[in-house]
Length: 306
Picture 1 (cartoon, rainbow, N blue to C red):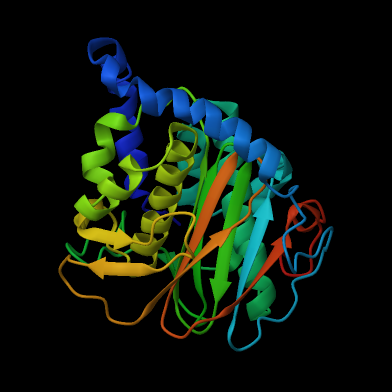
Picture 2: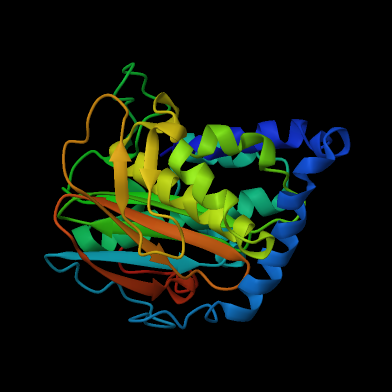
């Protein structure tokens, strides 16, 4: 099971351009404002597990009701080595290629979580689930939107920093994205690639203390939408316009090709301090229920995994 993370590629470029501020001091405003945004996020965010409707410590997978999207949150620390038994050969190979322990932990927690929740909804073995990842643009089989081979459930995965998130629904295409606020990121150089002209003007009007957090909100809303459509890097982020934070999330304009196949609904999630997250749904507007998955990952042996 693989996931397309369009903005992860942009972050690679960010690391290559970390000296941009030294060469162009005018861009230091965004870097400084990230530090301010991180402090603001820590003060204002709800504690992890305090989201509306979140069930803490559950070790069962409740039924996925019609018109509902479940959003499951976990900590990478919940990705214990025993969960490796749930992964298929391809997932295990990808996990083993990560060099850093924290990257392996995030990947394991995310993919084990997906298997446990999906198996719970389908009443089958987590280890026996099959997935495809066919690109809608080129037909490649290793970088498209992850889908179940059977079962009729849509899902999306994301992980960053201390958060792992899974979104699942039966009723619509779904995409989710979480990003960690990082004061060391210099994203100013990528603003033209991330934001449309309308969004750039809105961002420029914000005070420095709010601009970094707003930029990350734009970021997650757009990446969640591209995960829902399955377009990934084939669609330029700047061709999408969403509402400016702190306005309620909504798609304003989609100038990319192909056009959207269904109405898009955006939701801002609350992953806890130091992180920003968004959800996108294509089709009917769904009720979003957020749940704590750490107990689920810790509850092996699990009825859906054997």
